[in-house]
Structures are given as C-alpha cells and as structure tokens.
Length: 216
Image (cartoon, rainbow, N blue to C red):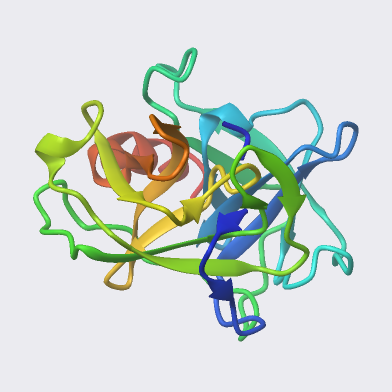
C-alpha cells in the first residue's frame, strides 16, 4: 500500500501540528509521517524513496512551505511488507516548534495499555482502490481490535468501512494522546470492510531510542 482517508472528516487546519507531509521530489510519491522529536520524523519503511523531502505545518498540499531534506533510517528488518515497517527520518534542519509544528508523544513501554478509541489521519485517497487524493488533512475515528484478531505479530489493527487508504501510509494511529501505530497496509475480502494494519510502535522502542540517541 502506498496509500488519504476514506470517510471521516476534514481536520481543523493546524489542529494536528505533529503531522508531516512526505514527498519524493522526483516521482512526487507521497506519504504521511509525524514529528516525534524536533529533528526526527517517524513514518513507514515502505515509504523510503531516493529523494525524500518533508514538509511541516501543512494543511493544504497545494500550499507547501519550504521542504526539509532528511537522512532515512528504515528498520533493518524491513523487507517485502512482512513486518518491521517503521522508519525514522533525521531532519537536516531541526524543526522550530510552535502552534503549527509540534511533536506527539510515543508510548513509554511495550506493556502500556492502549486505548481502543483511536484516530488516523492523512492526505491520501478518499476512495479505496482509486486515486482521489485529498488536498487538505482528513481524519477518521477508529476502534482498535483485540490483538488476537490482528493479522501478524507486532501489529495493531482496525476494521471498518472507513480508514486510511492510498497516500496515508506512514501516518500515525493516535490512541489516547499518543502515537501508538504507523499506517502500514490494508486487506479486504469484499471491498466493503477493510482490515488496516499498523506497525506497533511500542515494540520498537529500543530500536527507536537507539537510533535517535545517536544524534543527541
């Protein structure tokens, strides 16, 4: 899935200041991401491209601010969408935090209980299996499934008629006030109900801290 939000609603402009628009400057392939430190953005490993640029404080993608170049650090275990779909992007120019640009908290531990009332957001397609990208940020409320109903280990899942679609990859799954997942992929059997899979961030906390702490 290189996949905006199906269903849901338009976000209040700049109400999600951690959201980051990611685009390859050559192919214009786009993903979502989120700011986790003033110099790091988190996204999906399958969003890795050769000429990535990140844009902070975006509402409308037709009016982008100056982009920031990044160094990409995909998880070493990622291959062919089989898991480990997580990547950190080191900003070559750290963000200036303000009302429109800010960080989102990550879980403290892998044992932390996760709220089932969640939200996903992005600038991706507004219809499944059809490119109809949203210019403005959209969001949708979702309910987290029990872990035993999810597709693979170290993954969180939601199942609904609405949710992330093409262009939303790499965006956050927000539960409570924390980013607990990363939009990774979805599957459907009948093209009406979609099972969306998210990389479970808490499982990767040691890798996250090791990667980011190398740049303190």
